Length: 106
Image (cartoon, rainbow, N blue to C red; front, side, top):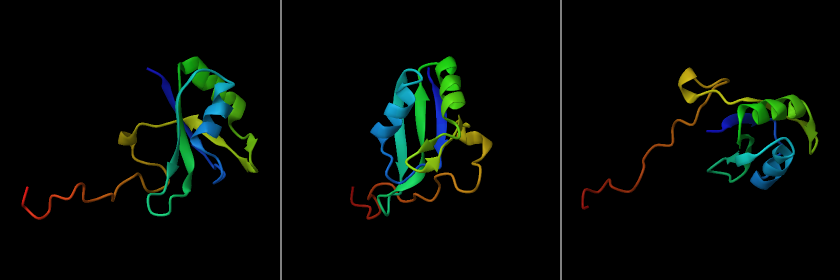
């Protein structure tokens, strides 16, 4: 299983494929995702990249943390498991109301 990295301070113009390109220079990227705001459809300014191994993840952190991409200095570190409580305030809660099964006529 790969190593997941948190990538913060992204310019709004950065896309999943941009992230993939940036990180693939440092190893095998198994997934790259910019987190989007559901309401506005804009980037939330951070994302996650999964690297193939711990070594590749470490190389990417070392190489990319603090580097400038499209005018903003990236923050790159190991993604923390959600169970430890989100840093800064706000992990995904409040999505509410899955599905449309409120009316009772299934």
